[in-house]
Image 1 (cartoon, rainbow, N blue to C red):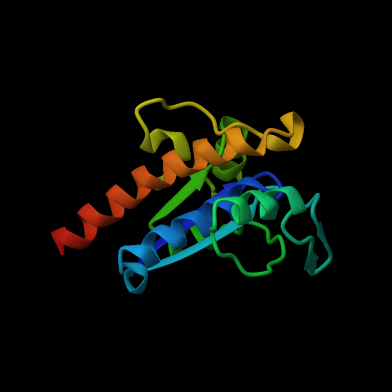
Image 2: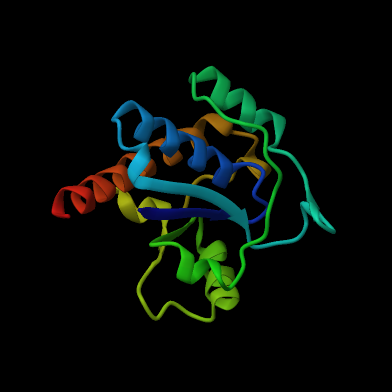
Length: 159
């Protein structure tokens, strides 16, 4: 089973959007049984003790607008042990990557990427927390998830 972990700062906007977009793509292609997809945060800002905040309402609204199903969830923190548990750990921006490297103790197996590394454009996913432009973030995430899906399909067909 292929494990994909999406990561952003708080795990209430971009990384859960990526989680549910990729899950929807996998379901539509009949590939969900081959993958385990999750998301998490590099910061505790949205986590209070053992309880994380739910997905941000505008992120849910964007998924609804594009008919992407999702389940209720709470923000969770990236752990060092996640590095061994997943095949890819995919951050939304350069700051996420820096924090992921710190939390995971580096990237000895070459598993850490930015989501836009899976596109021709590269760069960071637009951050809707500051811009409030959830549509731009959705477009970036969708394009990145298409690239991740291609990576997954190649890996499944190589087995």
